[in-house]
Amino acid sequence: MITFESVAVRAESTPGAPDVTILAGVDLHLVERRVAVVGANGSGKSTLARLVNGLVLPTDGRVLVDGLDTARDGAAIRRRVGFVFTDPDAQLVMPTPREDVALSLRRLTLDAAERAERVHGVLARFGLAAHAEVSVHALSGGQKQLLALAGVLATEPAILVCDEPTTLLDLRWRRVVDELLDSLDQQVVLVTHDLDAAARADRVLVVDGGRIVADGDAWGAIETYRDRMAVR
Ligand SMILES: Nc1ncnc2c1ncn2[C@@H]1O[C@H](COP(=O)(O)OP(=O)(O)OP(=O)(O)O)[C@@H](O)[C@H]1O
Image 1 (cartoon, protein in one colour):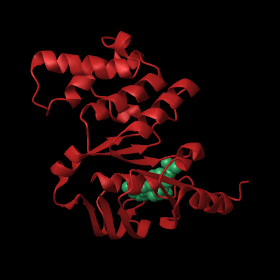
Image 2 (cartoon, rainbow, N blue to C red):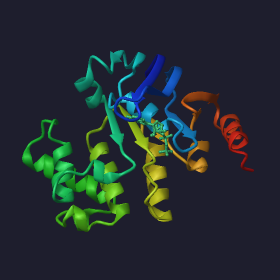
Image 3 (cartoon, helix red, strand yellow):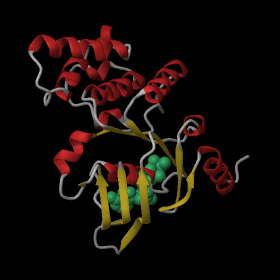
Image 4 (cartoon, protein in one colour):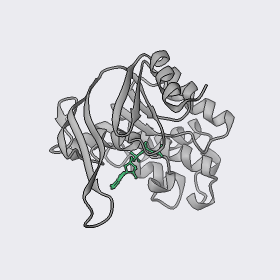
């Protein structure tokens, strides 16, 4: 369960300049299993997503995840909330896919054989088993995106936040990842420009100019978004 209480985020756009407001007046109580966040470029979606796992802390207000305050309980929050970045290079730190997934599993108490089996299973699920030992730099953009998602899911987080996780994927893998995200038991918060993916969510938030301007079932919220973008 994710709660935003009167949350605002402000930051300096350039050193010494007055703060700009990135998000303001956000009050949310998210209990739905699938929550999508849509909105124009620069509207504040990524900032909203990053608030959920404490990557961004509120300037005003509080963000609570299962009762834990992101500003006070950062380590516990990051164990509960997996975050998948748009840019997999922001996430992949080890030389090979096998090592990268193994690193994700470091907090789990598994013996060596269990760990190796878990790593192999995760890589296979994402079509990466044959690439386990290649350099991460040699993977395609889509393969890196799949590996980043694999590493986060391997830790079995209670909540998964994905910031445009399928932008680099071809149609086949986009469908695989869409189906996978749809099938997870965890609560998923998905930032996306893909309105087909948003349409499958239980609840859709529309962000515009740093505010939530629509919040409700997918159909109504997406209609509002289309109207605001004047796209039909
Ligand atoms: N740390 C920061 N300091 C100053 N400005 C920031 C900071 N982080 C984000 N912004 C600005 O806040 C606005 C919202 O950014 P954010 O990344 O949340 O948008 P977004 O909706 O995810 O955009 P996109 O769809 O293009 O990824 C942008 O104008 C961005 O430049």
